[in-house]
Image (cartoon, rainbow, N blue to C red; front, side, top):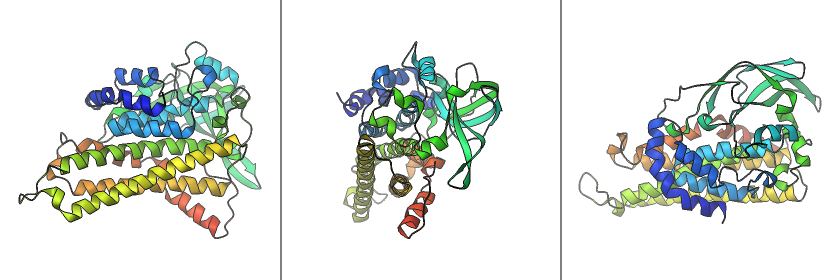
Length: 388
């Protein structure tokens, strides 16, 4: 059974748990168990650890399918589902520490380097606060971003960012997730005070960017583990947005088909209403098709031992992020053409609309830098390395 088929099978339970998740402000325990036990959250985990190790496009399709039913569950699946892939790039010692006793353990994350990391013998001393750690209540550890100095690349001095993996007990969770959208993601703050992280539990993002050999690739040699970190993380976020938007458009269509205007005119007879839906559907289909095409081509390139150029990465990240933007705009356009009652928090369209808007606030979905980089490369501006 493919991951998409699995996602469709668990959809009714995810829908049933959605209200509880919004109330709890985190993914309910039953939803988390379902995502793990069904294999969805382990779709990108190395097969030798019991994971699916599926092609990227299959995982993205599953994220979109889950997001249709439960935007928050789709977001957590995308964000936390990419962590087993990243852990597969760490050395064997780290993989053993995380999965040796329980291969179903998955950490949460927060990659913006908002904390401090001091170099000490054998590793780093880490202190600080990291926000937006989706699914952290269920995380078996936390993958955090830290700045650790700089490195010279092609004559340019570039900031050195690293992912550091903290284990349970090395951090606390600040329950500060009080939001209008994505309430059930539980994207709370991670607080760390003078925690030691050994070198083997860290990886440089410049190594990811430059396509340098990574320790985990020795044991995990499949094409999935030859793909760029920046694109992998970008794609799962975009898939979450597109899935949530698909669910919104379907729900909006169902409600609008039987709605009447204040003057008693059936809304499904209004030409402009139909046109808005036609345009939104086209934009959503286009964004999904581009995401599937780019992820399939990226996987094929990795299988052939080819590395993406900075120009190619800029182009596919522009596709993913601009696609998310235009789909978000389409959702807003439809929302403005819905009942005035959608302002009430218990209206069926209120929560999914707020979810899409909240997703689009993620800094990694900002499209402009990638559009400028891609267009610049077409006009003769050399891109030396791809952005993180």
